[in-house]
Image (tube, rainbow, N blue to C red):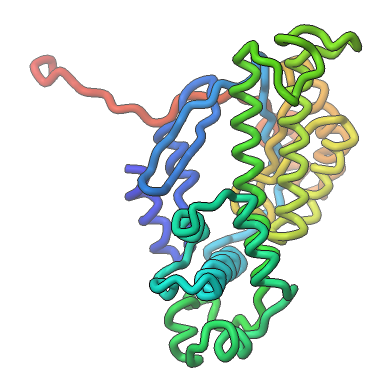
Length: 324
């Protein structure tokens, strides 16, 4: 069902990857899900630190992704980056490679090693369509358009391959680190994360749970910075919310496709989330234009900024036909 739903979204012209659909069906209460799409869809529940609470804040900056080419442009740039690296690595099937996971599998390399290949083979900040056709891929203009471009990206003449590739690979590294931190905090093994021994205080009054949470928050901040600077899918209103979150010591990042929409933030308790929400209401939502104030202020903005906990996704109910 997740795969079918992901394919259906592409009928509106958005080349999405299926993450939203996967979590909608596969979510488990109290857990994050480590979702993999290769070689097939798989979700692994990851126990979050005790008490962790997520806050969703809608920037109210709206963008119709299906009516814009921005989303698909990033997909095009990532596919081009993967194809060019595959060509430089002289794989016999390089013309069939469009995804970084294909490269990683063929090279038997780590994400860190793949990151180095991006820097080696994609040194330029901007590539033109002409140099991609003639120098990098050795294809004609028609083949290039047919192979890589979608209906709403045929206008593209410049491509930021290095930046997009670095974001995708470094974001994967952050996801792996997030999972590692969550799994470590449920063991009693000392690790680089902790200065204390076996989960006990390090002598400064900061226990390992606090350290784990701090590291998770840092990863979320780094993620947004990369989305803003390398993937370039943020928005000034999203950045305002992130800036306020940083000032409050709360890790946050944009969520969804970007260019508007929501941020998701992580607090270490429901109590601290209440303080954070009140701060956002005072310093962001109550300063919105009058039209938005009238629309969302009547119920104190509770529809656009709220705390939440991971819940279950869709479930299958089997009816007892004899009782129907």
